[in-house]
Image (cartoon, rainbow, N blue to C red; front, side):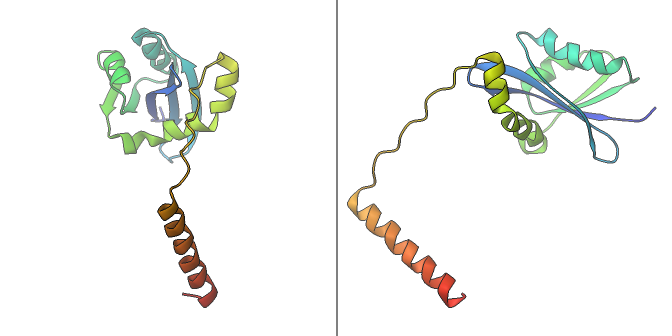
Length: 141
């Protein structure tokens, strides 16, 4: 049977928790993707069990302690704890569908804080830096 690797993490939008599972084949191509809200660790393990219906063993890579805790004692699931940069693909996948998920699950996002206006010396420094960079563009440097 063909071997697949699943990159699975717990991601948050606002205060809502989602489990994101992306399945990759040996060729590195993405074959499946799941974004699902979860309430408990059993919800996370159920996603891995769904994949077990089709495969003998499921290989899971995660940087999320919630996912690792839910799957490390599940039979036929080999889970590996990775660095966050190795599983960044789940974060970018959630960001790609963030507007859809916010509308679908009625998530309240915190308001973005407006930055205070720049002080006089910072404005001058900013304009000076722009003039220098424009000079480089004109001179071809």
